[in-house]
Amino acid sequence: MFTHTSNLSHRIEPEPQPLPGDFAIWIFIFAELLVFGVLFAAFAFARSAHVELFTASQRTLNRTAGFANTLLLITSSYLVVRANHAIKTGDRKACWHWLLGALSLGTLFLLFKILEFRQDFAHGINLSSNLFYMFYLALTFFHFMHVIMGMVILAAVAINTYHGRYSASNHTGVETGASYWHMVDLVWIILFALIYVIH
Image (tube, rainbow, N blue to C red; front, top):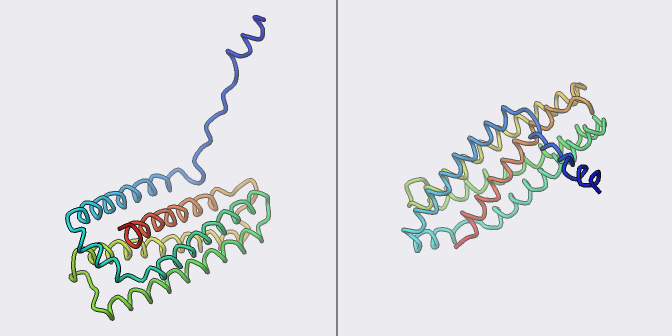
């Protein structure tokens, strides 16, 4: 009885898992999330003071394009997950192919967003149109630049993977790129809901 109690009292707790990838990227990710959080809070505060203006302006946005871009980024994040899993099992070729797929979808996102921006500008929407459009263009363009940065990181990871610099025992670089790309995806999902969907 005493032995059993002693065993319970000395039960080994599982150690917390470290964050995937390089710790430096997480400092950068948390800083970026803080910036986006402040911008989202500012948008919500401005909307509460101008509900009718924001609601009317929101209806002019191309929600179909926004939803298509959401699907593209979510799917690309899934491909990055597959790439991360592949390199951990030592399948470098599959990892490279999954990363190429993610980059392709990221490229489509950028193209769709450029077309949406062109449509907006053709309809006379710009930063000075009204408060809603100022937030819409500023937030989506800021995120657009983050997608480009994420693709540069993924491209570097893909090149290193192709040249055999990652393996089942050395895959921190893949995890680092994946972590940043997931942040870009998460921010877009919040942005899409806030800008395009929530009334």
